[in-house]
Length: 495
Ligand code: SF4
Ligand SMILES: [Zn+2]
Image 1 (cartoon, rainbow, N blue to C red):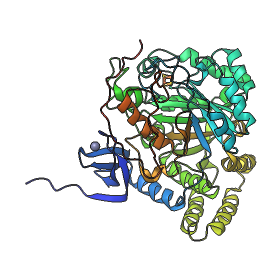
Image 2 (tube, rainbow, N blue to C red; image 1 turned 135 degrees about the horizontal axis):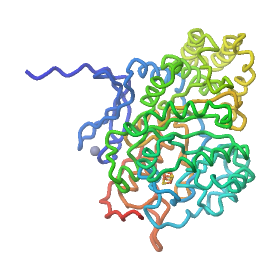
Image 3 (tube, rainbow, N blue to C red; image 1 turned 180 degrees about the vertical axis):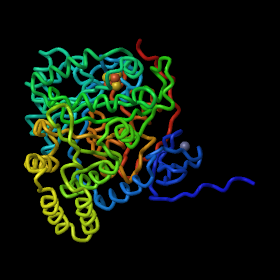
């Protein structure tokens, strides 16, 4: 007799993307076989699955709470800006699929009026490697003149030159996101194609020297550099590294170059893809004092705060806060406050916010203040309140206290984990020369992967005489149906 099917608990019904054809298909978030996962049902290719969490009770709670406090669509205030398709590295795992075409820098004509159209947004100068763009400084100045916050996302190669780092500071960048995957050079070789440690450490010293607040973006690949989760955490806590205000663990995704197998050199990445919840598991295992249970409650507070200030935030992104003890160690948030009582504050907010939003928000902020005010919190209470204000006006790491380090367990939203209901309040949009403003980065990423499949080109890189394809309408909560055309053979990557 065939085994009975394992029990399935459906948490939500939504829309997702088929792993094979990248079509928009019905999907469900389910708990089954001891895990939480997203199941996508394609009429042509059957069911494809994305693991969400190996801690189903945790995930059930996070999912329920997130949608309870985020029932509306908020205005996007944070956009990734694509500047170029080129890079001075050639990582096998490149999400941006850099250097797969010989392209000029993207033509940004048309972006300038767009920058003036929005008020006080954050612009993340990102893909592929912004520092290779010759007119980068001009664009930062334009963004600053338009009154926006600016963040540089970089591999750090050029920042390792002190005079270049200084120019970035003088140009007006508010913060830098530095790719830093840890201290294991073999892992750097696998992920980035070459050893990089000396360069990264020099870049970090330079960022400190010029006074640029820094977020470390640590890509973690399953079976590649899992032990670096704890290593990087301990490194960030050192007193001399107090310009590091965030450590974000980014689970490896099979996207861009990796999805194509374009640049794989002798390493099988098939089992290395990770979701945020899995990197949280690793930190908990490697750093005593970090507990998933505390992160669960912290996220309720964090989601409630963002909901109060109407700030978009992805469900998949989990956060936690620790304080430096000034001696290379840390104090977890849970040691400063009574988390169970704060959880009750968050739950009360969640139960009232839909029916009485104004009253619920005032009460939440008041209760948060009352329950956080105690002797242990006294030295940092002011800084904690400032952090809350930053969430309201736009996160600017320069203004985050050097005593605090925000931890993030993040993902690149992609066709595999795309959930249309989550994309409604995707934390980052995208602005590009060819696409204008796209409110949800998750939608932009799906569209880009489809274009990769269809044209074997990177977006924005039209060949001379070639016309741009018509834009694909893609509302954040209902990705456009793709009329999939046969792809042309792909170009070989550059050596
Ligand atoms: S992942 Fe980043 S650093 Fe690596 S090739 Fe792509 S753009 Fe360059
Ligand atoms: Zn399909």
